[in-house]
Length: 118
Picture 1: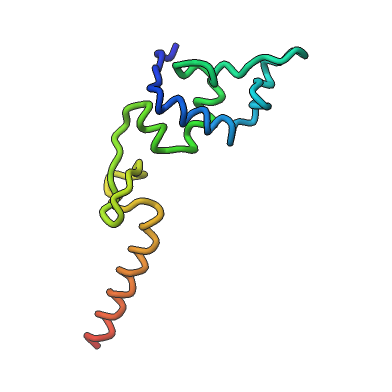
Picture 2: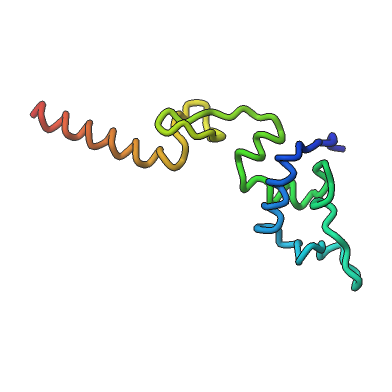
């Protein structure tokens, strides 16, 4: 049995936005699996804690920062832009948006240096 996770008001608002945007079970305020013809309100939208297993396992991981915040995982800040992100490894210094740009810049500098030495 998993422990109960309480949400702050800010986290709840972010979760509600995610539900409206990404949840496959959400239909205009109702939860499709709970609907038996007369409509049943989405319980995760009105709850102050994480109770919907589908939301926890399928929808919430799409927002890594919110997921890390709710489960108290450590977040890091990008060395390049300062944005918070959840690293994929213990050596990651750049957020996904900056990592490609920084890698390309480092590769160009290395190639330029190699050409100057020859």
